[in-house]
Image (cartoon, rainbow, N blue to C red; front, side, top):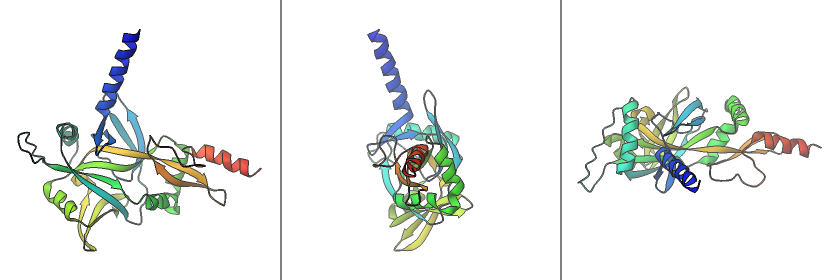
Length: 244
């Protein structure tokens, strides 16, 4: 029985490791889908990988600051990228030669201004999105992606002083690059290949008017701050308790 338990544990560990990848010591979920930073959806687990079922893209009327970490490919990240590259539309070439010390790079993009995202989600233009989030505690907001780009785009990001998530059409988003406070280049997400992502959950709390608000975004492994809840329904119960 112990051997069976041990075997099951090893299989679980193997399956989990196949679905995730450590990037800068932070675990991300592998994907073959074109996942957009700031989008909303449900993560579906399969035996060897997870898929992200995109359900909504909020309106971000104000540009959202994004942090960039340019990272060399490893054999592991290259394998994950190759699977995504075969299924996504972008024509991205990565020339990885094992014997050459200098390896090609990709970029990890992460929402840097979480407060701006929270403010946008609570705004009137996202009323329907916020309501949807309140009914679905398992829904994630994509707060980090790993993106492979062709060298000119990657060089532009490396040279940029600041990068923002901006709306380029109705609920269509891109990266806006700045150098010396001047716009230099816009890079649509579909110009690259997304091969890993990380999602965050909403934390809810009642405001002074006893209305539900999103007050924080946390990863699966982190707890919501005191007196805030992942479940909007639990926050609603708190409101009803305060009203009596």
